[in-house]
Length: 283
Image (cartoon, rainbow, N blue to C red; front, side, top):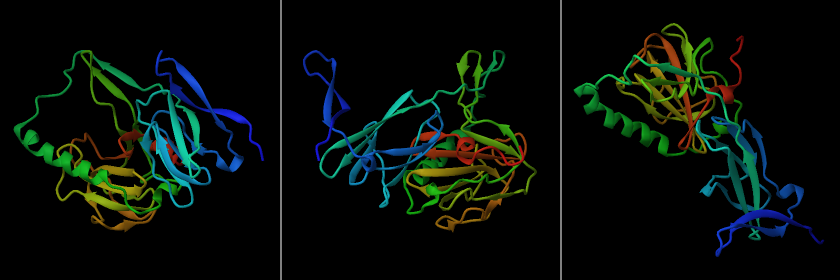
């Protein structure tokens, strides 16, 4: 059967540097990239690759695809306004999917009379590199687990006291933005796994900033971190199921009061747990 020609790729003209369009055969309905979720800064998308896909990439970076064609991608808090998925099929055709990444209005607080950070102590400077090495190593892998496919639940429910992406400006100098969602609850409140996963970090002693830190790998490069815990109930290597208790709310590390800080990443992209789990129940 003859197929109509459709524009599916853009290449750079070698002489003038101008963009030119390359025509390739139009793909059938079952050879299109299907995606669903929040296409916004800090958002996460689940998708299905076209039939016969042998490689998938997001803006040139490889994306893992499950045997059934399912995959997950996400966008950093500061992601650009557009992204492109490229699926290479077995017959070498390339199917593309343009994604418009919606911008978000982040909460900004300007503190013109407060310095950005206090001078770090010698103890902090000595301990911090080792802590960061542990965190980076834990998040570098990807466990063979399917939690990424699930509809995430809140690890603790209560008043949201801190929003993802919020940022303070100290005397005109931007500080680090808030990398997760804070849930204010009393010390000892149970914390449960928001989805299936494998424990890849369970702090043996409180970290300088994160306190008792727990990191769970949900597979496909997606992971959750739980900060300031009063107690960690699971060990590295343990497989946890959605809803299983993994620890308890606390105020360890740099925390002004008891709360759970839940942070999520897909590869290097920091994402908003509120967009993944949905509105707080009863909120």
